[in-house]
Length: 458
Image (cartoon, rainbow, N blue to C red; front, side, top):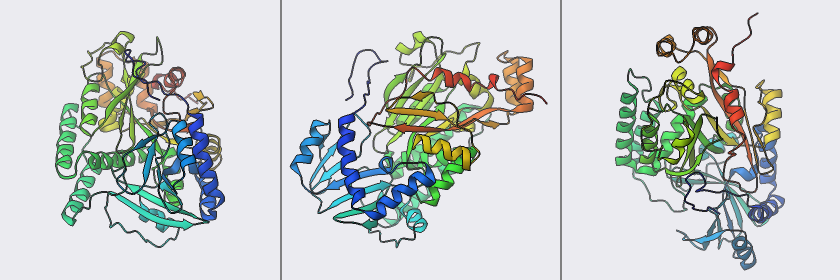
């Protein structure tokens, strides 16, 4: 469970939840044994996308069963209000699907970005009761022996019975989604880029509310990032083949200059995010992060910034950070490519995978190298794909040179070879572990420093 403490660096202590995982996996394994179509989909997820059926689960519904309820409560699940029939249980201390009791059979819904895409990819009839652009749409996929598999599409709504939207509201949804997808990212002054994003977000929130606005904003962010990363394109195509999309996203990583870090966090808070744990990989790392979460969309952001140890105890997510005469890894990345929030896009998307299967498939089928793991615990495994090298605009190099933030040799390197830009991150979570590795990340971040990646001359 989450423990609140006085030290901001230890105010969230996530722990593996093996008992809860054992109970939930027992339910899922029983479901798969009685649902041949789900079992086949599970196989294809692993063989064709390097993912695990368990990680795609949106929700579970079960017939009333006091013994199972007692097992869940003993494993850390808690009873929650429900907007439909039956009882609903959720686990706040780990990443587990909500479980509802009172169904006529065992039902599992898997997360997809679009039920239409899933139906088309799997040649299923589109028997969806909810009309297009509803906040929740549920597609029946298959039935088994007292079981049913569903594909579930959500847009900023975690419950089962969302409010109905009229046609004018749906047109506004399409309008604002288009504006986020095409928002201008390059400005002479970065502050103008934030102002433009504020304008778009304020208009969308007024028409759609905070949660839906957040959902469509990050759909656009993933799309922008995918267009700039070959590993992402390879993996997205595989997941799209099964009609899944990026619904297995774990967290979105943004890099920010010190100047705009609080400005960026403020924008995300407007979209309903709350600060979670602070992240610092240790003395000498030169950077840290604020983890923030939007509970109704399931979106988590890992926000990186150059920072000193003494600044960690301040409210650095909200108080402006003073300028420096030196750039560490995160600051240099922003100097070369721009703010993640604007021109550069995300540094990486981390999605949930079968760690070993993805590595093997990336390298053998996609020709994409996966770097050495920087976390290899039983409950958390993490590795970057080899960095995507981006060209660097001359005006950015000239500005860094003039400020004496890079050397002449480094400027030459960036002009001729570009610089490492983005990654896809291979992540596997077990035992519901919700946190991050606080100690093993410095090595990988330093390994992605653009100054260390000169291409050998021939």
